[in-house]
Length: 562
Image (cartoon, rainbow, N blue to C red; front, side, top):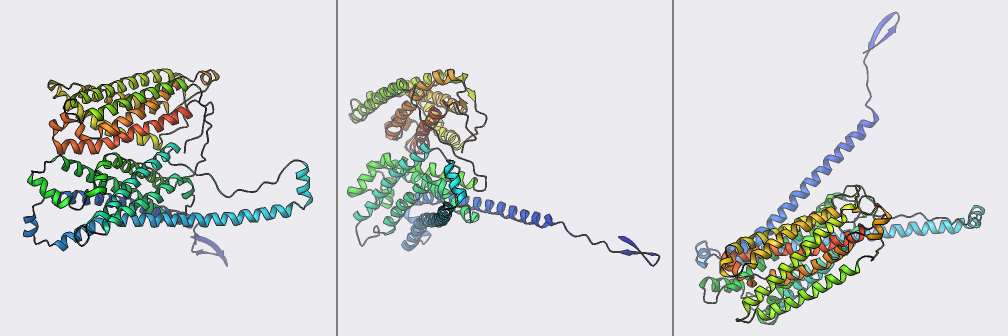
């Protein structure tokens, strides 16, 4: 209350307090933050729902194929009902592809609109500069050797994954497109006027190919695409939808290829096999294109899995970093000094590995030399693990004198490396268990090679994560470049291990002891779940080693990596 004297008496007046100006701003900020948090939560729940559906649909399709026909008769399920279930299954993936491509087209439209605005602004600035050239001040500046600057409109954006990682996404994307193209070609071999002749069998892989092409460009040019930061809610839902689409494709291909390989082990005399094949294979994997897909799928389907994994992680980083501040990117020149010895040593190991694999594939088909072929590849694999383990230990000892760059942080490449290592752990541990109980049967190489793989993977991951933060800080270190020869050797030998895992370990039929120990279903599922991650680990190790090879031996300390 305010007291005021009036005619000799004090009079009370109500005290009116006006709200500060910043209260309204604070309320708006609180409202904005609450809406931001709500959009993040809803987009995360939406993505999780899509991923669960992407796992449920292919698993339900396999489980329903094992149910006897009498079950459907007792449940009064008609053919039209089964067709409706198939349409729902295929329609789910078409929904994923079309919504993702619609979002990407919207992003491209916004980018083109921004480029048009920037070109208009740059044209206006150039006209102002031309007009200013006639003034005396501009003439004086030119006489002094000072050129008027044109203000720039664009700014550098943060990158998501290294250049080598995105190049790997492009390479694996090409393999994924080939895989989808072969599936598309199967449609033209199907008999018309039958239940097999379903147009969705052609539309789905064709749409997947278009999605891979559009997404490949988006991933490779992600800096430019995310320069448009308007409509954050739509962008957030679009990114999480694309991430879920890649994971659903990953899960679908994984389940389908596991099913196909398991069915190949069954004999034609098995009633269960005949029933499943009659339902699942009557429309697929027949004639020329079908047999081509059958033979090429062990080599192409890991491309789809690795491509989907890379894209999903990069898209998750974009979704998570959508509201963060932008950081300037860095550029490096490449110096190839102190690398030639390790390069040629690694090439020699790579060539010998390829020769041994060729011998393996030739001998393994001969009944008299099958066991010898398996022993030969076990020895080569064990030798590779021993060489790379020694190289990792020696390189870690050499680079321990380099200083840590405290400005660096745990990046996307490190996260991918740790995630992919899980696949090698799973494969190695299951192989060690099978090898331990199979040593009495004449193949101790199973356990030794798997144990060496487990040790080598652990040491190499520790080395990469440690060397990621190291930098040369003195002229002597720049002159000697400690450990660079060994880093180069590890880079090439990991390519050799990638070839081994891709061509030999990924095929369940080339491991008879594990098949006998675990059974066809169990070992094939273990292989198809773990080996794509193991293959990706070898590829991504080369990516991380390239970054170490390029960045560690630089005198200049860089700002926080983008």
